[in-house]
Amino acid sequence: MNDKALVESARRGDRGAFEVLVKRYEAKVYHLAYGFVQDPATADDLAQDVFVKVYCHLPKFKFESEFGTWLYRIAVNHIKDHLRKIARRKEVSLQELENSRFAAEDPAPGREAERLGEERRAAVHKALQTLPPKYNVILTLRDVRGLSYEEIADVLKISPGTVDSRLHRARRQLRKKMAPYLTLEGRGHEGGGNEMP
Image (tube, rainbow, N blue to C red; front, side):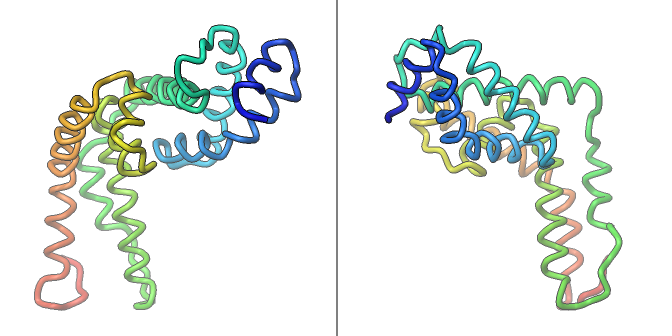
């Protein structure tokens, strides 16, 4: 059964139809949320909240776009609201970003590359959290989730040209915030040695 038929059945009170829609999209919504929050429990909570909102707003869905796009839009807006609340409660400092480079070392040489990769991912995530939500969202949709410019434009209700310019500004800001980390990382590899600065 296609999405449209399932939505129409769900609107008539068929809970089974809505459960099929949830099963069809729950992994995508979870992974989208996880891309932003990097915490499985929080991502799971956000995904559940999104499906509650979708269920409540199902009567308002007008089939002007694909159901998946509409669902993604609700998910992105809900996650943005969550990120705004977190930003008000706690700001991640760039000092914390710099200090992540000096995390406890694993003495096993075979794990060095893996440790550096994990550190880099953590640093990028922390830097993403310091960006304004509109930049955090667009980077996550494009660079983490791999959506096309057209899909992002549809989800965010902006033009593809705006996607392009906003993405350019977001990447520039992210590079600026990552500069202290990248400088420290570069110093750590100078001279071909494995010693930390």
